Length: 330
Image (cartoon, rainbow, N blue to C red; front, side, top):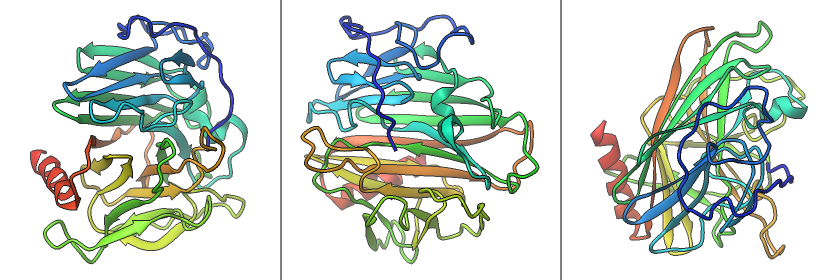
């Protein structure tokens, strides 16, 4: 869920493009005002997006709150309105979790911990987060734009310690807050179907934290949370998905999230996770996903790769073609 807290930097988007800078000082406020070392605008021939760390920013899409790292906004030549809630983000690293109850900043630890941005080339940005305070997870997230409307994603992490009372697993949770779509649902293939013989499921939960997480057809990992834990990731839907992707509609566009297969990718949805709409007459949904690391080991590297596809809606056959194309590339 969003934390309503805005701290802006006037006119920082005047140039439209940011260059990478030296790694931030760990003593700096990780949620203070952005400089030109904290934020980058990347483009292809059809899409443009902003990628940044945990700093706050004011720009053409509105105030961006501190703590919402990742893809700040996303637009297309086919749709000028950003698909992500301007104050928040899409593909935002939001939670680390295990079996223990969380409170305060620990619940949103990736948002409160220092994060450095490095521009690799004209199309690639890396976010590096040194070991976080409580979970002690060090991570590297790379976003690469590819023609014509692809954002490729690679996440790597190393837990630097593993608590004895954490249940033996680590969860990594990403959130995307969608900018007031009429249809709040995500869509995925039922576990009894395939890309060749699809059977679709529409998924829009009745309330936040209710039956919110969908496991894959081969995910046999049972997570034994403490009885006080009541979150999106602890409430499991009876549905199962069959292939590692989902899509959602935004105006005339489609957002397709597709991942390299692993049995421990989980999907999640909330009808209100992105807060109120700008007009205050509805709520913004959250379209989320998780990586579960069972039997987590200190010092071992784990990861997840995926692609965000943002293009004009051309029907479900086109969605399946894009998913098949990505899965066949790797």
